[in-house]
Each structure stands twice: as C-alpha cells, then as structure tokens.
Image 1 (cartoon, helix red, strand yellow):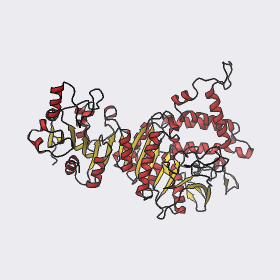
Image 2: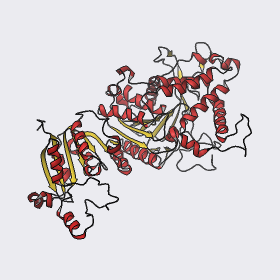
Image 3: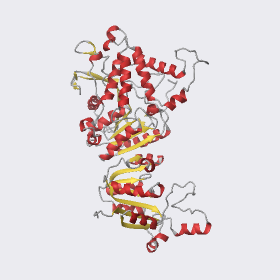
Image 4: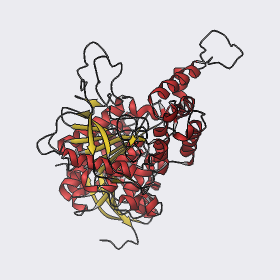
Length: 203
Length: 382
C-alpha cells in the first residue's frame, strides 16, 4: 500500500463524507470508499482521469478550481476535504486553503517540497530549474505554478490562523523516510498535512 | 440501409404492442381507461432479470431507438450510435427497452388513437400527460415485463427528465439514472420557444381546434414552422455556420423571398418531412409536458429536497454549445445532488453541435458513456 494512502486513511473516520480536490484517477477516493466506507466526491479536470473514475465507481465532477471555484459547495458540507499533489497547481493556493476549511472541518494536503536537497543541489549546481520524479516538467510547461517548501506552507498556515494538526513526511515514492524526520525541509520530498481552523475544537 | 447489417447493429427489430386494461390515473385528474404502449427491446434479459436498461425518448422520439425495421430502411433507430453490440449501451450485456410514450404518435395511445368513450379519435380531448405520468406508465410496463429494478434508466433531453423523475418516484426500482443534455426545469426562454411552436400549429387554418382528423387534413404549415423553430434551437450558431454558412442555392441573389440560402432550404425540408410524419396534437402535448416538468416545485423550488428521496447513482452529461439545455442547467441538477449527498458524476463535453450533440458520437462522449455503462453492467454481473 502507498504510504501516503495509509497515512491519509488513518485520518479519515469510517463513514466520513469527503471531497477530493484534484482527485486524479480516483485511487484515493476508491481506497477510502473501500477501506473506510467513506462517501463523497472528487473534482477533476483531466479527461482520462474523469473517465477512469466513472468506470471504477468514484463520483467525479468535472470542475476547474481556478476558473469555477467551489461556490457550488455549501459551508461545512464535508467532514474532510483532501487535496493531494494539486495545491501547487492552482492559481491561488491561499484561497483554496480557505475554501477547503470552509467546506470541511478538516483538510488534508500533500505537496512536493521544493526545498528538498536534490532540488536545491540541482539548481545550485546546474543553474537550471530542477526536475525530479515528483516534478518531472520543464519550467515552461509545468502545471506546478505555485511551488513552495514545507516552511513556506507552514508560514502561510500561521498567517491564516490555520492549525496544523499533524505532519508526516515521505519520500518521492510515498515511502516513510526516517531520514526526513530529522530535517524535513531538506530531506523530505512530499509532506502530508492535516489542517483545521485555529479555533476549531475538533479532535 | 446498406446491403448487409453493420456488425455493431442490433439488426432487424420488430416492435411489440402491450395492451393495458387497468385504468391509469393521470396528474391532470383524468384517467385513461385502457391504453397501448409500443415497445422495442434489444438484447437478452438475464436469469435474475437485473440487466434491463430503459431508454427514454425525447420530444420527437419514439420506441425505435436502434436497429432497422426492414432491410429497406434508409436509417437506423434514433440512438443507434449508442445502442448495439459493443456500443455504450451494449446489447451483448444489457436487455434494452425503449417505448413510445403515452401521448405519442408512433403506435402508443395518444391524440391520434380512438377514444373508447366516443369511438372517435381523441384529438384535443386527449389529456395532457406529465413526465410523472410517463414514468408511472413505464413502471407498469416494467411490471408486465417482470423487471423489478432497472440496471439504469437512460435518456437525453426530455428523456433525461424521465430518468430524473424515475429516481424520485420509484427510488428502489433503478440502480442508475443517466441524464444527458437535460434540465431540471425549463427556463422562460425554453417555454417561449415552445409557445411559438404551439402558436404556429394552433393558428394554422387546418388545425380546426385540434379536430383536423375530422376534416381529413393536417395543420402541415404550422407543424412545419414549429419544427423549423425547434430545429434551430437544437443546433448551435457554429454548427449551422459550418454546415451552411451563407451559401446560396444558386450563384446570385434573386431579390425575392424564396429559399435562396442553403440554410433556408434545409429548414424547410426538415420541417416538411417532419410535418408528414408527426402528429400536431402530440407536438402540442409533448411541448406542454416539457413546460410542466419541475420536480422541485413540490418542495418549494428546492431540487435537493426533492432529491432526498432518490437512492440511485447519477450520471449527468452536458455539451458545451448546447444553448437549449445549457451546461448550467445540468450543473443545477448536479449541485442539488451534491447538496443532498447523492452519488453523482458529471462532465461537460466539448462538442460543436448544440443540443443535438447528445445524438452524435464524439470520442469523449462515447468513452465516458461506455465507461459508466460498463460499470453498471459489472454491478449486475452482465
């Protein structure tokens, strides 16, 4: 089992109603439906992914976060709002975070760490924008227009009064990495954050 | 019809007539003492009777959805592109049922049927039928066929409205509801176009208050105009532009008012053909059925409240250039389903053909429809 799925699964309670922003081919939602009896929807814009979701029984809505927003969803209509590996691809990640916590009591966010040592090293040494397994694009065609580091994300959360309930760091293959625990912003490739509103007393 | 049948065709099919002798109460307060439904089926009903799919037709549709009636037929059924062996509604896996709805003019009881009370044709005395009435009659047909639960109820446009109504009226009798290019209610603009069509028919001198059969005539011009205006709303500006542009039938302007542009002659041809094959009273009835459809009405206009009754899963599809039932109308349905936590999937398909796109097999439309129906089939072991 992919380590990130395993970790996210632990944060979703049985029967939870979840919204997955950028649900891809529905792997995560399908997994949560099977393992956690979760219900909910995925939002996606990739046509092949949408078709795959429909075929595997994941409820998927074609909706573009950048151009259509999330106005069609009501406040507090989900237990958990997920966003895996998509925050860095939206135009305004700060606004999406606000929306996530408007729609759900809790958010789970994963994104690639742009301060990982290999990316730092690559940029320092070659002078070219770095590429990696998590970020296999050129600067001009990358969908990842809002890359950030773990520190950047945590600073934004502080600024927005968003409480980080948990953070787990994994490597590019979504495996738990003991090294990354010591120096996550340098050694961690992907972080999984569990966030909520500062004033939320939900456990 | 080509010399040999295409391999992905259901082949030559024969409609059947089901007679119903028990009265059916209608939303208008009247009842039909007895009535007929004309039905076509494709594929085989499986042992546990779980693989049946109901196809609901749109405004001018009928029971002949796929295949050919004879080797001489020029064209196959109206949704042959999507129904057949290996097609999205795969007749190797599903038992497909399509009927001509009550009030229709293709064999099921309607205005051009004999009224048993008078021994004459119903004409304007035929009651106005609602989508709910259709669904009720379809459920009675399902009873007769021994189908307890549809694997899916599927329809485009007015057909999609029936698929939606099914989910509300018989929540336990369908697993999936598929509404393509549909709408939860007509807009003022939609009703306005219907009214123009009705006015065209009822002001035709040959209409005779709907009793034109008695005068051995039909309001051909009115029906033709009704179809012409309807047809414009089924296409998009771009698709008409592409098909006809400003092309003239002859080289130069004639400085008159004949059909000089290709688009004029096309519309006239379509209108004339339609007026020869369709009953004017049925056209009035079907447009009124459309106008009245509004399942949210009973819940104070709140569609999500109405949908709280639904148990099935939904697939909703819209087309980018459809201005008759715009993507926004489909999204209204989807948002109501989301609000009430129904399982729903939605996609807006890019297609240039306006409302008619639901009848035209574009790669993405076919792929999505096939992928979804594949799962519907797997769930019932078909």
